[in-house]
Amino acid sequence: MKRLWAPWRMEYILGEKTGGGCLFCVKAKESKDRENYILYRGQRCFIMLNIYPYNNGHLMIAPYQHAASVEDLDEETLTELMLLLNKSLRLLRRAMGPRGFNIGINLGKAAGAGIEEHVHIHIVPRWEGDTSFMPVLAETKVIPELLDGTYEKLMAALEKE
Image (cartoon, rainbow, N blue to C red; front, side):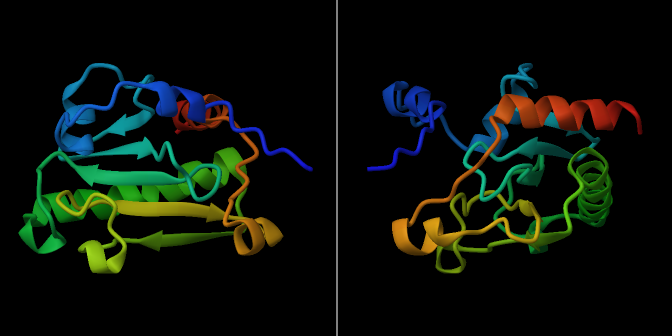
């Protein structure tokens, strides 16, 4: 039998489960950017690592405004979302050298939104050969780098900008 180690999951498994409100609203209000993997704060939106990533470097961009859809955002917030999308792409290219990206917004549960009450953009860096038989046969995605390592790598690249 082969083993797949994911030691960071133990904190989630054993951690206290709270109904502490919207993830994006709660994390944005806290002053714990490193602990919350927040990489950058703009005037209206922020960039953070997804702690349950589809791939290394999976980022999310969310507005501070609690809104379920991009239709509910003003023009300035929409503009900053797109500017931070570009900033995220540059950052990921510089720090991790991906060969492509999946970028998406899931609006509503039927579209796959895990947090449907607060709109956010997913940016998933991709490399040729970054998928294997694991997702197909074992319904498991292998993430080869710890979040702290990815965070450090991205922060170092961000400081050079």
